[in-house]
Length: 367
Image 1 (tube, rainbow, N blue to C red):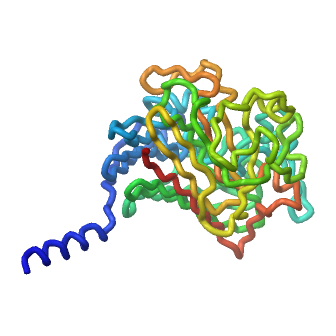
Image 2: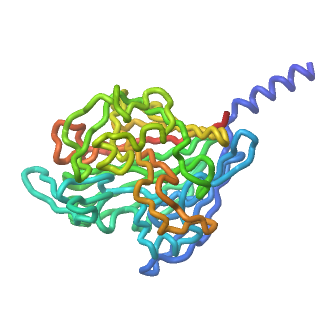
């Protein structure tokens, strides 16, 4: 009877999900004097640190196949590193109002033309010169994580409508879940993502060209010289953009291909086969050196795969590590670039009667 009871209690214990330990501490002040907080989420062997400045994932420590943990995202040792550089590489940040590029910094909505500051040649990139990555969000501890809120006023960076955005980071077991929500008081456009730079060897531990990547997408959106989509959804088959089967990232990155030359590597949007109808596996990255695996699940229709082509050694990150070209990759779950100027793409318009909601999950393991 006693052994039966112990087995029964063991089954109950295994079925009860673990709960993250959440702590908060001051993390300095932004340039305007606004206090910034750092939230630490810990569950088992995984620890995530997120600050209210930019909603940035400051660090993400996960174990390798031998159980040794390492920080797998690029960043800085302190708030000053992000503030003084303007975090131009957007490391770890929440991106909005509009992630990725808007051609000419211009779009038309309800018959009216709007202008977003150009900060990427002739494009508006990642929300303009002062996007969500440079704002101090209001943080609140929740079960297993932190809830961040930011209110973007009508006209901020040229976008219409007052937009209230909430992002929840929660850690449960081996999954970091990012849940985005937003409402507006006037018609607007919206594209949110997280811009973490990953290196599964550990940040600053060399390039990611030997990582293996699989993307569940049979099409992508080719771009012009300004990295703006041409409008077509082109097949990846027979091109260096075919990651339907797990492929070494560096295998074809320098191939004689016009699209690769325009972006100096990979920096395109892949059209997820599921079409963003439900949360599903979009991509999987694997580092054979450490055995670490990152799975990215999302309900967004696209994922931007970027290989750190513009990291140039001018940025010194955590632990004095210098970040060079292709020392990290990004897998940004989002809508397609320049969607406001492409009515054939899935819409990014948000109306006052609607509530935007989206989920992305980073799932870690080792093999």
